[in-house]
Image (cartoon, rainbow, N blue to C red; front, side, top):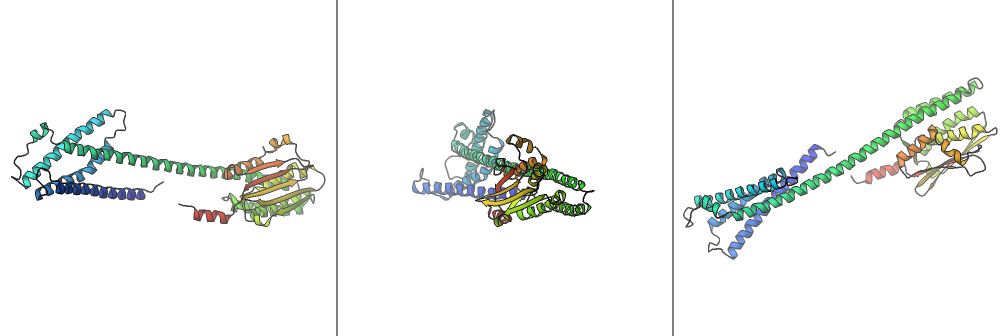
Length: 385
């Protein structure tokens, strides 16, 4: 929203510019009038001191009246359904102002230069003969300029309001998206911690030493989640560090039946990814893959870059899932939240797909825009304000 002080400063500057333009306009009209009289004298009067003084007085008065006429155009606008009444009101005001202006100019001439003309000013005669029509036309011209100014100002105000509304809408949308992402992340954290505690509980009696290791790793995970509550994106190497701690817990749980390999391209280490994006994918691989086989379970993590896209994949050697089972798979809290968070962060610039075509297992593939913290900083610096 535009600060009030900035708005007042802009209005003051506009009024000064308009005032200068009014002075310049009537000054130019005065010079043109005087120049015309000098080149082609009317009625033999030419340029005399009385003519110069009275002409100057007339245009000075018009210059002083111009802001008042502009004010009237804004107060008595024609943007109404009953436009006839404002039109008649403006015409009536024009007659009154023109008559008064004509009277002031003539009376000033008679007072300043008595006896300079053979006839004296008589208001009733001027009114009946409509001798003030020149001033009436002048008033209407200024009135038309006032309406043009008023329409321009209203158009600019509406345009600025529209721009402000769009900015407010975008800001509110961003705040709503951020709140929604935060809510999804907060929903994911309890789910993640609950599953970890469940894994610990399953080994309390069988492997007390392993449980102590798992509790230590869980402590690290809890500390991490508390420290990173506000971050929606983190570098991939931090995400992998968190994932390795989670996998340490799962290795204790599976007692040597879990093998994890990584194929992480070096250029992707600093790429920003959604916080806790890999954990639900690995958890899905363990729940629907490794935990359902009797042999050693293998999970393979990959990260690589293709052009402007970062690709992540998690593969397992479990029994696999038929194509018609994928929709049910996506209804789990982890995968459902993952898709919703990706949509909230990247709109349509992401892909989350499931490959069930292999002889065994399942591969979950995520593609999202490749960017780093340095890219975001550069964009923020170079983006026009």
